[in-house]
Amino acid sequence: MTTLPSPVASATTGWLNGLVGVVIFSGSLPATRVAVQQLDPVFLTVARAAVAGILGLVLLLVFQQKRPERGDAVSLIVVALGVVVGFPLLTALALQQVTSAHSVVFIGLLPLSTAIFGVLRGGERPRPAFWGFSALGSALVVGFALAQGLTTSPIGDLLMLAAIVVCGLGYAEGARLSRTLGGWQVISWALVISLPLMVPLSLLTLPPSFAAITVPTWISLGYVSLFSMLIGFVFWYRGLAQGGIAAVGQLQLLQPFLGLAIAGILLREPVTSAMLITSAAVILCVFGAKRFAR
Image 1: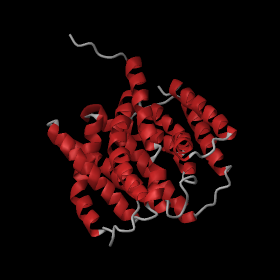
Image 2: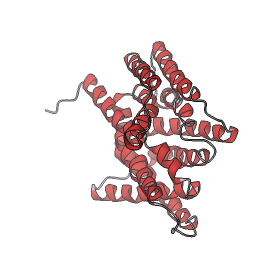
Image 3: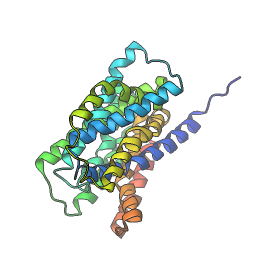
């Protein structure tokens, strides 16, 4: 007889999967910022989706996955519009107007957006204290970003705000669907249904010449295509489905600080005491939200 995992074990596994996803996503905005210096944002968006979509199609064929039910089509379209097209395109356009550091202000709002759509689409009902910890964690991230003396762009800010809304919806819808379809299957199918549009657009928006495109730009394109668009979602959707959309979604509060830590290790950028203190406070908020999420 098959023994089902306990709710506690499932939630713990969900948080571990979610954390891996967040670590992978932490490099997305810096990589996008590098890529849009030499690549058109539209080309970057459709190219990363096309590359990831082809890989997703290969995975589905190799593992002989059955097609989604007819009733899943609308949800997959929502996922595709939210995380395959919407968030990458809007952030790429925004990062032509603002720095990746400034985008941290809005990434701090993503857990709240995900939690709200988790209630609306996932049927979750976190306890009142959850919203307090979630709001406090978001405020800490936003406050930290604003304290850096960042310049603003109204157009860039509006684009980032729209990106956060569509991304939260795509996360929640994908997590809801992952409960029955599977985490990596959801993002793979969402990418595959986007392929008929992404491949032609990739060819139409090709740069006139690749001669001037540097190695860092190619590496950034490869990262956002393979890791940000596919591998990260394998862990992220699985984590959201196992541990709860609202609860595991709070791990996104750590994303800006993980990104700064990665920059410190790879680029030898300084890690300040304010960064460490704020990170510790955010971690406490994440655990507080986890405690009251159900």
